[in-house]
Image (cartoon, rainbow, N blue to C red; front, side):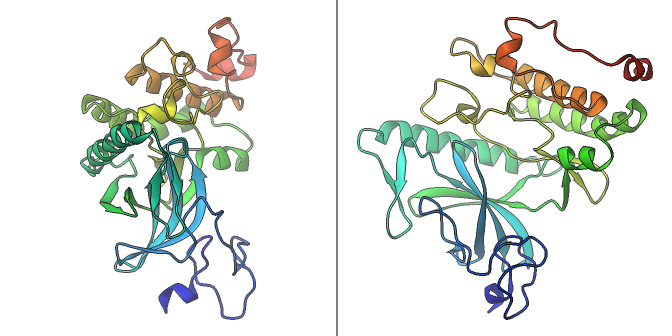
Length: 286
């Protein structure tokens, strides 16, 4: 079977008899923790589930394989661990007393996913091409963007880029963000770890979450990114929006040009005079 020939860690071919993948090191008998879907699970009679990549407060993100298109994919499973738990048959069970909150956030997850799916024309956004229900929850499927994260790429080249190198890299992303914000969609997690430098040499934004997962004081466990989440994401009283993405983008550009991330947003509320650029690097900037 196709799934018996793949490494569940990276979805590359796994030679018969190998105990671990020679590419990613994932063991041939590896599996996910009980809260998450087991590897080799088949969803929608089409999508093969691999290892868990991350948990983001609203969803579990798995590497996967589309058995129709024969390609790697990213699978997001709506899985609010503060409101639900996994049953023995893989189905989600809502924790007693959390029914209304679960349904409200579940609906927001679906609306958010559909909005992202409508943005397939934006080249800098890793978009969704399938949305479906199973196991009493919702799933989205996105193309897998080959390449390294911006964080990894910066480490490979010595820590930073010069302005003339960074500017063309970010311009198409900024254009896509303008269109995204015009449609009322916000990412709220822009950072070097959520930007992939693709094989085409361009930046591609992944790691979308619903806003409730990117802010404190909601029914979800917040998934904030130190140094890149805006101050208002740490504040119960303030709203998040396009301006929060502007902050994350600016923090990412600062990291790209200087080699260092800015201090955490919650700290910058008390003291925002804390951004220092070495003189040599400052002279390079327009």
